[in-house]
Figure 1 (cartoon, helix red, strand yellow):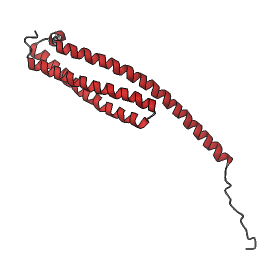
Figure 2 (cartoon, one colour):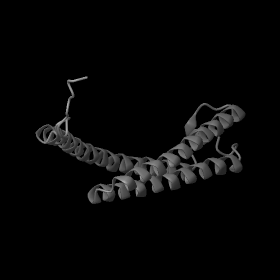
Figure 3 (cartoon, helix red, strand yellow):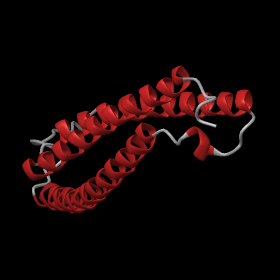
Length: 157
């Protein structure tokens, strides 16, 4: 069946997978940087990296749509439902395995980062609560009287 499928169509699928793999490698690198940002307690940079990762994820979603669309067209054109016929190109299989491997790595790092972030966030939240309590105590203790100085009231009028 593979002989029937044009090399151009296979090359389109391979190109999409290569771009996706590159974007996933970028996300992996950014996820590792996030881990460093958590160690340095650099929240602003951490959030900027999240935004950069989000842009790449959106691009990956678009690529996935293109990939599925191309597969569907190939299925319809060559009257095959068996994906193994289409994906029998060793290059496609190698790319898909690489993508799965990097996704596992990203998931592991991201899960670890999320847990560490939650711990740090809870510490920050508890310290904020402590600050609010101490402000309240301080403002109650050092409460300034509302009336400053004496007032003279003239009763003759």
